[in-house]
Length: 449
Image 1 (tube, rainbow, N blue to C red):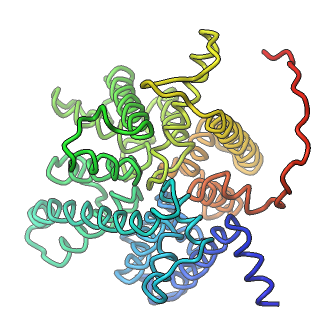
Image 2 (cartoon, rainbow, N blue to C red; image 1 turned 120 degrees about the vertical axis):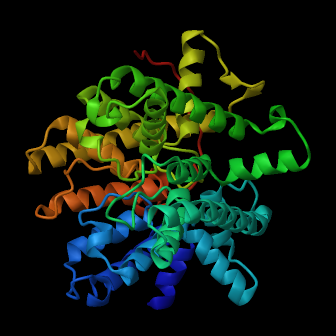
Image 3 (cartoon, one colour; image 1 turned 90 degrees about the horizontal axis):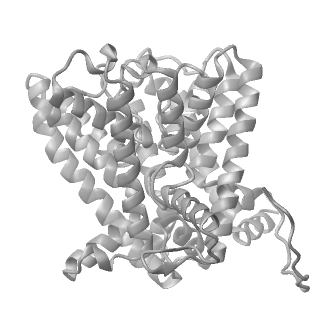
């Protein structure tokens, strides 16, 4: 029976990826339930431990208990490990362990790791895993080295506290997980702390394929014009969204005293930049979040729904998916047969997948919102915001995640799992494989629109 189950999992990559993730959730939940992880020395209830584990593994950051006040050092260490596992990807870690033990990787694991990391060929998996690990730890070390002296100064020379906070922020920021190890949260007014976190989070949302391509071109001294199409689309779309978000916050929330706190121009620009970058996926605690206008909540829901780059630590439908949709709309409006950008034509399968992902995720948010409207008394705006935050791994909460209402926790946890693994991976995992079609039917036009 065990052998049959193993063969069934190995023959279905989507189910294997989901199984790995569920195993990690189980282990993390059990550890966080133990009295050794809480400051009060008592058992943690299942719902709190489960939700916190899912939030950490999915690198989301939505919490229902204060991370610093509730979890002790061991509990925070468990959360940090979950963040690192989730950020790099469960299949990356599984492949790394296999490489270490047996010096070889199963073809199934290579397929999953290739999909997770954005590798185009199976032969690239080993080298890409190596590059991913080097890149991840390099960025985290750089962030740590920048954060430690700043935190040491802000913590009045407390060495151990500063070391732990610097390590936690370095890992959490690159993996875009909005957990904070200090009750004060993110030192949002301090450039020396906020800027390294901001830069690390931004790099994390680009995705491993983009970082690898940029470094390869830089090593060969090639101009950005030689970047591949995926890198160009990711960078251009990401910068466009960040710029749009920056202008939005400056225009719509300029007179928001809670957000800008009667600050001067430079401080307002800094707060607007934080507001433009953090909600996309980073999710670090920002005290003014509940005080923004209703239209800003809806705008933030959109940028969290779009998310970050493919094969990155971010969630959402991904910026390249959004870019493809824009290009498809442009081609339709201009009555062009092909969707082209930067001198390249998009594959039809890419367009189909982009439409399928967006439609599936939109329906997912709609259904989740319907359920939450039925079981809570919160406004529709807050519910849509929370659903987009969970799915897009934004990490912000307006209080819809209620520990006294377990239904809200499980709905949001499901969104976080799907947002981390990807909707198509989950769909493949729960669907029955279909044999290839033996017959191709004739095409016929229908009236749309």
